[in-house]
Length: 391
Image 1 (cartoon, rainbow, N blue to C red):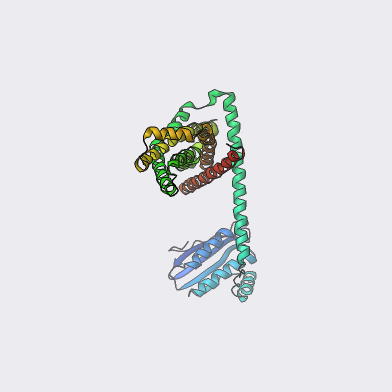
Image 2 (cartoon, one colour):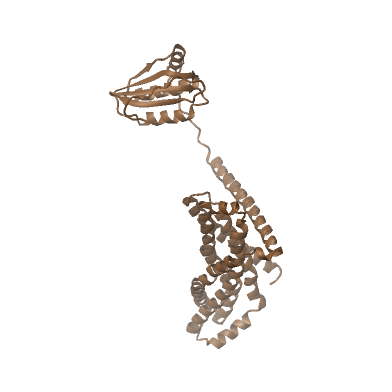
């Protein structure tokens, strides 16, 4: 870019890329063009001159030296004519030095045409803009679905290979992720499900009291927690806590090129990183769901004892009468599927990190949003299925 001192000269060289040495001397901005100023070589020097004319250095006049130019076509003439026009518009008279007759003819012809008219793009109607946004969203969803399907296929193949050869399973990472995703999440899951159970019991008792049916508050707590709320609340907590951790951990390794190093050493990232996390969450989430159900029932029992004066023994008896095996089994059956969904989405987002810290944050946010969305969709599908089979 601009500097002080005398601009360096270059001799014409056949096939040399276009270049432009810029310098300021005695109040004169000197531009020495060199090389082939043809359309093939112009992109770098075009960007250089656009930056120069956008913020020209302090000078009283300008000179453009043509003596070191080799080939010179209309594209090169357009770039220099534009540079000349913009420098003159900024208050610097421009002198063309050592310019050939053919070069001057091209420069004059292009300069006579004046500045090009700006391209005015007609505004799209609102319905076309809206339709375009919908199309872009659908295309992005389709691309993500295809990528996710390919990733799930790769994980299934790796799991099948692990089942045939159990020694491939990384037991220590498996246990470690069970502890991180399961045991370490117990305090948060217990606290939130206890409070939600208490809130459901309180609201249910208030509403059912209007009909003299507050005794059915126990049925409400037991059925809603064991079938839906306990699992759904636990899955959302795990998606926000463990799913995001999976994405951040794998994404950081991808950003530091540790995954590429694994492949170089002959280690499969699916075996090392993905399968232990998926299996750990499939085991941990049903256990967390069981604990969440118990804590929800305890929270509801405390409120029922305070508001309805129902003793713990009567509350436990009413819970036993209100639920059957499948009331509890429905929630537990859904848990492994939700766990696999959360783990696969989190690991897939981590593998999709492009190599920057910003990408890690974006993929982590995306994994949490996608996981919670898919968990709710999966819960709705299971609810319709169990209703259809009368369970």
